[in-house]
Amino acid sequence: MGLIVQKFGGTSVGSARRILNVADRIIEEKKNGNDVVVVVSAMGKTTDELVDLAKQISAHPAKREMDLLLTTGEQVTISLLAMALKEKGYEAISYTGWQAGIKTEPVFGNARIINIETEKIQKQLDVGKIVVVAGFQGIDEHGEITTLGRGGSDTTAVALAAALKADKCDIYTDVTGVFTTDPRHVKSARKLSSVSYDEMLELANLGAGVLHPRAVEFAKNYGVPLEVRSSMERESGTIIEEEVTMEQNLVVRGVAFEDEITRVTVIGLPNSLTSLSTIFTTLAQHRINVDIIIQSVTEAETTNLSFSIKSGNLEETMAVLENNKKLLNYKGIESETGLAKVSIVGSGMISNPGVAAKMFEVLASNGILVKMVSTSEIKVSTVIEESQMIKAAEAIHQAFELSGSTVKS
Ligand code: ADP
Ligand code: ASP
Ligand code: MG
Image (tube, rainbow, N blue to C red):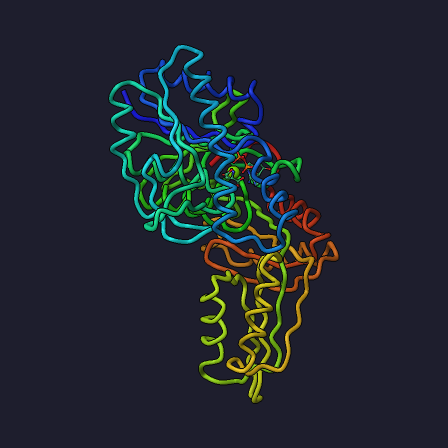
């Protein structure tokens, strides 16, 4: 007998009928003789609807109130699911994040889990109950309710699996696994039978929304075996694990993309030793995430600096830069919105020179201009026009032979 953590995403619990279906999947696991802890998201598009509702009230709602609002979504699902399980003859109890002992840092909107006090859950498991926990939420040291960032229910599940030393964490979603690229946008995408933690972490960080990046981080750090699979279909999913034996010619494992990127250019920054650290420290103090950074090296007294951000952070970024104009001592700022990031990921790249060159060649031959580039040992990212994002992803996907028959690892 083992302990399994199952997580069901928004679409999987999108209606009463689907919640009843999820209850059946949980009961199957229980009948196999396992203890089960279940993590669920808000039903369907509830979180988006709550965000819209808040926008109708206030352009800049307080982050604390936003977190309190958004966490209501998951609370609806846990109680309904516990009722469904009881209706089917199984003992179950639902807990919000704070009832479940999920402690986070004191940050609204994107808090990290610091610790999980598992005694309460363990007690319920010991008396044979199925424990249903609300994803995406926790409580900080001041007793304030926090959220883990959009898509954060995956992280709740993996963190619980780590804290409870579960044998496995299954992420049930609306696709049958992790694909070579987003199957909703690129029809030739293929399901991967397995992918390494490192590759999955890059894919998730670069926009493959199938898993929350911090969930992968937790899984890697605590060695939690993870499987992404469908809540509707019965087929086996994608295993995420430490080492994946590579097919020799599989240099690129997947293509990820992300829209709503903006490039900010700071013009006429003093060419001094401390310019860079001052500007990025200032942005970091306001928790603005900067992605790709490009600085031109010149002998001149001033230099230009470009960096990319999520478009949603543009207003705040501009305000921070303008409020600190004296300190930063630049001449002007320009920004370009309507951009996207398209990336390739694969641990086989380390030993294969020319992968980036091939990617640029494919983009050029499709008339796609690359505006920014960033590389690491296992990825190449390019920033391009948003309108060309899917075309670029399809072309790259094809050029690296990711479609075709099932990609084995
Ligand atoms: P959930 O609500 O279950 O958490 P998400 O919408 O967060 O579901 O994640 C599943 C979605 O991730 C899929 O519907 C798919 O469009 C998207 N996705 C992006 N990249 C990939 C990929 N490489 N493989 C599978 N799905 C992907
Ligand atoms: N309900 C939250 C969201 O939509 C968390 C999640 O689904 O993982 O982002
Ligand atoms: Mg998700």
